[in-house]
Amino acid sequence: HNNELTINTESLSGPMVYPLFISSLDLKEKLIDHNIYIATYWQEVLSRVEDNSNEAMFSKYLLHLPIVKSNSKNDLKYILNFI
Image 1: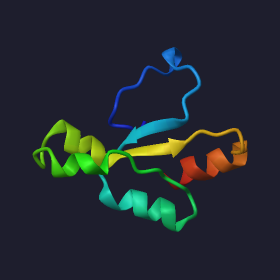
Image 2: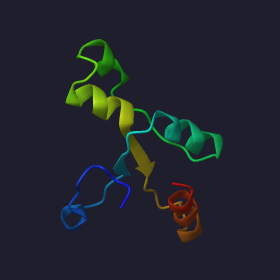
Image 3: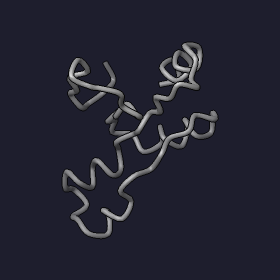
Image 4: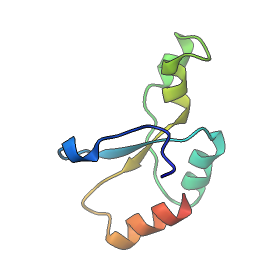
């Protein structure tokens, strides 16, 4: 319910991340501080687009929450409760 991005999860097949779009720059740093790894993609986009463009917003605010087999249900609950 916190995701500002609408995703049809019924059509997904084996994603490696869950895309969480949340307009908060400090959430990513807080997650990392609590040992929750968040990959960063498309940093180079910021040097090529306008600051308020959709591309810049995705680069800044889209968090790629890991979905890997090594995560237990408790790991996922920890991440969800933290968010």
